[in-house]
Length: 297
Image 1 (cartoon, rainbow, N blue to C red):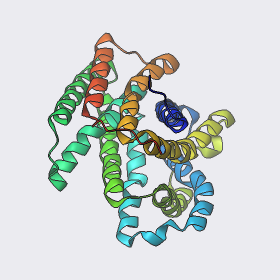
Image 2: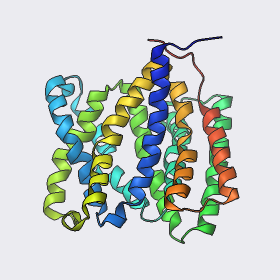
Image 3: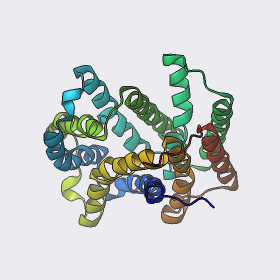
């Protein structure tokens, strides 16, 4: 019987932790509008509060030294306000379960399309099969969501896909440019905090002053620190210890877990048709992952 090293155990724990981090983020973001906060407030928390930790770290590690100005601009724009405001806007129209499906779930499909169009990277048969299953499942889920949810759910689904395009672009460039965690934190948090927070404070609508304390604290902690900082550390550790492919396989659980939490916590109905489509989506995600021997370091 093969025994796992301590690093593998912590790597799997980190990967499963990020599944629940992302899944609960779907729930927290979905209920944000009930707190009276605007989507602009949520974006300000995401950049401004995270910057409280990111700025000292950036000053210490100086991650900009090994980045070209063009790289800083591109990564900052991709992870900037347009991306996150699209995602937060999507939660105003579509259920939390759709966030996991149309944002996390379609990432492999978008990555394959980008790789084919931009870099002429031809996918293998397994990736093509996985992409086909993902495409079929998302079409079924979109159809079922339109039939069972509000008539505007398709708007949220479309915004989630736009968010997935942004994030997939980041993933591709991060791999090709070999970006470190600190470089991503600097571009995605510090640069955007400097550019966005003053604009938000001076001109954008805000419900911050009237928001109840408990929902305000929940959004501040989760939007400001958990996905941006904690999630990034977990992903980096999991990828380093168990490999990117194994990490991706575990993260394939996000759409299913997100849908389950949406049903349990928010009471969002999941039809048998949707459950079957989520299962098909998960199979497609697992199929599209290239299996490699996990790293032991």
